[in-house]
Image (cartoon, rainbow over all chains, first blue to last red; front, side, top):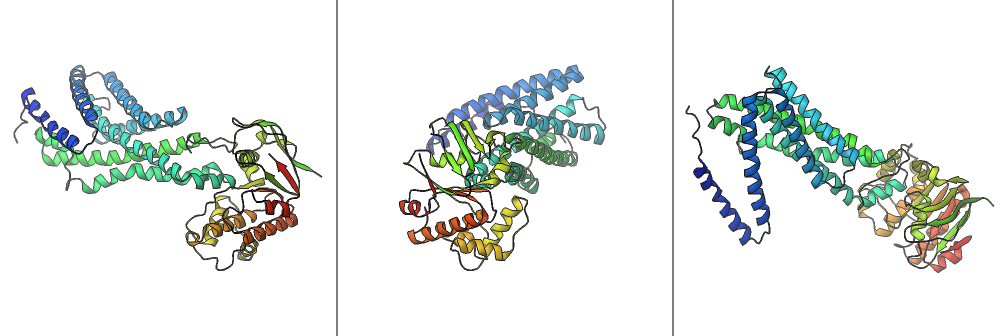
Length: 261
Length: 202
């Protein structure tokens, strides 16, 4: 198999031309998201280049603490994004979310990199890209779960009020919504396992194959990644929701849902 | 006469209340113009609305009570009722289960449904009932818990006049027999004149 064809800046420039097509459709369909497209394209470019530069340096220096710092930065940024889209969360709930993501990522890295691959868990070449994928998917799952949690609570105001008046404990009132949120968070990951390989070829595998890895090796990595993503989303959302919902009421039985509920 | 609920200098963010006293085992109607805070007062009594001032239930400040226990002692039937999309009997079972209580016999369920003028099969789906019927099934369910105080916010909003009089009459009779203090918020003059032992004007 040949090595990958290096893409020059000029060639990359040509790829950007595709965005004009997207812009055209946006304006034709009167979708006012051209600003988002613009910001998104610029941020994607800057962020990825920065990541590339930083990763090159980290790989070159090969120091364990850079891996740790990179991991912490990733978890911080993904948490911030979750909080930005779910403004109703209280401080304790937020701490549980960060903790759940952090612990599940650390557990999976130790399990896969350390135990399965038998590589040093702080080796940046393995730990950074793998944890990057895990954190990204976990973030998406948790965002979906939390958003769904709030939406269903809002739709069920009358039920909740009625159960409160009936003297049902907040724990019993909220538990079904917690379980629904966990399900909502997990569904996309589970669905992607169904369609993968057939309808979609995942980015990581494509990248590896382009870079000259044997497809079968790429596939085995991909399977491991998919299972890890699924596990990570599951553990994180389970931890976040089951610890977090308990911050929405107190011993006395007062419920502190969000202002609108 | 035992004063079961007492308020002193009660106020919310929007309203100031005069001091209110509710007598035990009596039927008290709360009347007043719209916006006088009738529904809010009921919510304060069962600990679902924030307030400043003092409210005591049997000489204990309700702020010191465990709200779950309080809401089981002072039950509130709000203006809108909620039932699951299940049959009548399944709704009873579900709510009893949620309250961690042993389900009552079908005979007893029928007894309470009869009080609220619901006849027919217990296996009818609640989503097929009319608004008035749903409300009455819900009132029957609440009655079955035999709370110490039962508060009903506009019990007749979805009922015709005749049924309303009959249902409230039956509720009052049941509460007298079981020693339940009944508090009703209503606009209906006829209802007030016929059934009120005490009237609180806000």
